[in-house]
Image 1 (tube, rainbow, N blue to C red):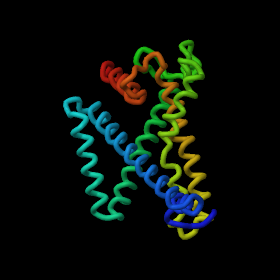
Image 2: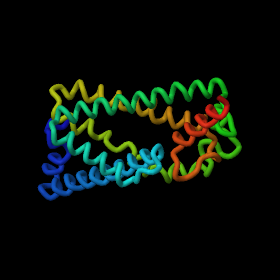
Image 3: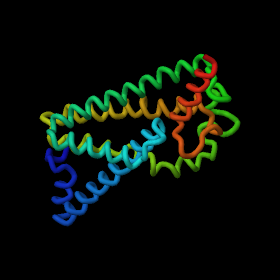
Image 4: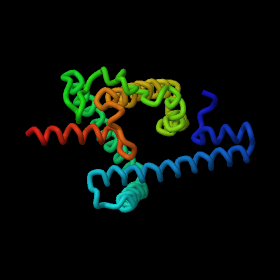
Length: 220
């Protein structure tokens, strides 16, 4: 590690490129997270509207913003606690999906008009790459955006008591979580729902869950 500092890369930019370099890198990073926050609030509104169609996206997005600001203003400890339990809920939801999805693939369960199967990865309609391999390269920009925040491991290192031990441990944990939670869930989605049953405007996980749930209600 170059030098432990709470200013992270902004401090390094100041040392290497002067005050202007530090100013530019710091504000660019702020704008990045400001725009990311807006995108995530809109995503919250869209997901909320999926379950409650009569609620406007703007209303739920503003409500989420007010909640987050209130928690942040209350105390750092309160925000940390809130973030911890929110992360636990997210991880629990992903683990439940992985368990249920794996069970559906193993049992060849019916999802919509098709069946969950490993064969969906190599289906005649293109499987995981229905539009060709070039599209995978074109969407890398969105993928990089989705993995934004990995750099926080390095930023928080400036305030760690033992970064030489904690940073490698955190990096290994991040890699494992990406492989299991993200790569694993996307691969499982491709097994559950063929690409020709996906439509723009609806996430594959939501569409897959809705199709399976509707089938269960219809046959019960």
